[in-house]
Image (cartoon, rainbow, N blue to C red; front, side, top):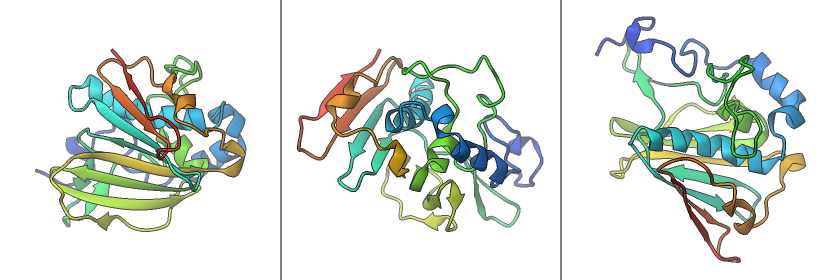
Length: 216
């Protein structure tokens, strides 16, 4: 594989590979939480689930687990291929900048698709920017890593992880305090629709009954 930046292997599809962190973009989201996350935590969860749904629709996944943690954070784990990661000319991993730059499919396009809550889909950068912290764990067949963000900004480099034989993405985030609105699995069960081929399991740690929702 040719790893020279700028050739067709680095062609932009959903994000600009040349943009590591878009400070203006993240700042705009943080200034306008009501615009980018109407409904608070529920909308942020749907933003993450939409990427799992993309994978499921491609035939590479189909199951996602949403966990509500006691500290107010939420994790969304899928069994897809993992976030696209390339290697530069020096063999260093470069991940697609999904957390800290705009999704080219949805920003600046009035006709952008909506999520099941009837609000526009914007992308993962909304989740990162409107969270106190977010940890992105990525497992692919060619390697695994994690990275931590605070208010959308990466605060650490990619941390290599041991191969456990699986692929998929886990995004664990703690929304800003003003956005924390979800309390139980039951409150989310009806929002796991309507994505074909995606099964969503919602778990609030056992205090309430786990909700399983199969869509499609």
